[in-house]
Length: 91
Image (cartoon, rainbow, N blue to C red; front, side, top):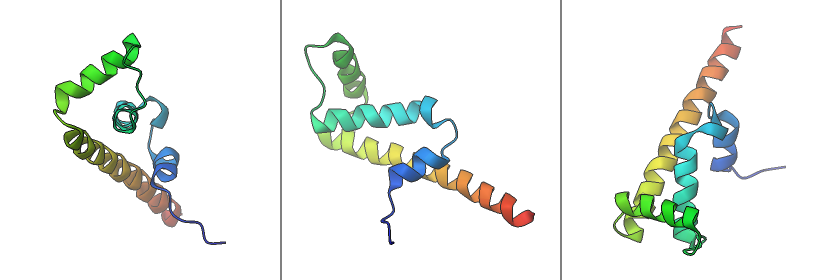
């Protein structure tokens, strides 16, 4: 069975400390912002929106920031994957 590659499944599996990584949280915040999933009436959500606005003046800027963060996360996960494969090949 041919399964399509899923970048986020790969990141989740191979990124060290995935569940506590601040860039993963930032990516999630940016994704929710771009998808319009934040509730502007909720104080927590407003705080996240304000944090994004400090870095990103426009939705296009937020999209670029999301791609930058996601690419960095993928590269970090890929490096961890490669280190693991090298360890296996050394045995």
